[in-house]
Amino acid sequence: MKRIPVILLIAAAILSGCSGNKKTVSLKGYDVQEITGVEFSKNSLGAGLMLNLDIENQTGRTLILDSGEAILYNNNGKKFGEILITEPVVLPKNISGKINVPLKATFLNPMNIFSSGFLKNGQFDTKGITADIDITIKSGALSKKISKKNVPLDKLADMLGETKDKNNEND
Image (cartoon, rainbow, N blue to C red; front, top):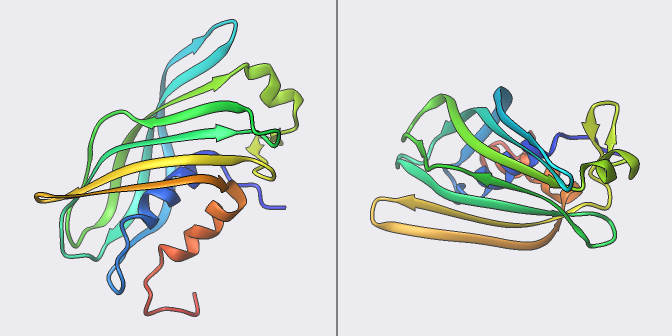
């Protein structure tokens, strides 16, 4: 069973949408730089996150992650969370380095996250969890919206391999 942080899965979804046939955007790693504005309420838990992605944009074009949203569903199909990109993010052409991605994460009824077994040993267990993902990427005057519905997070984790350079099929 794969245990991968949800934030990394969202990053994989974002970057897999940026890849072309030969030149790609590759995700090499990530870390959470900062957690801000933690908000607790009776029915939700929210926080701002600054996700630092170590990427390589081989496309030769500056890309802008204009917007992004992931709605998370538990294994019963009930919505339990949402992650949003809070402001556009620029991925300069031919860059190999770190990019900050500001996110807002909200989890509904946070006690269910702990009691359902979704959170184990400090990591998210993605088995049975799905997401609806909408991302808008811009390059110059062109814009592309990527929408995927009911994506199993286990499959989304496998997309990390798809962000690798297509010329290195053995990776």
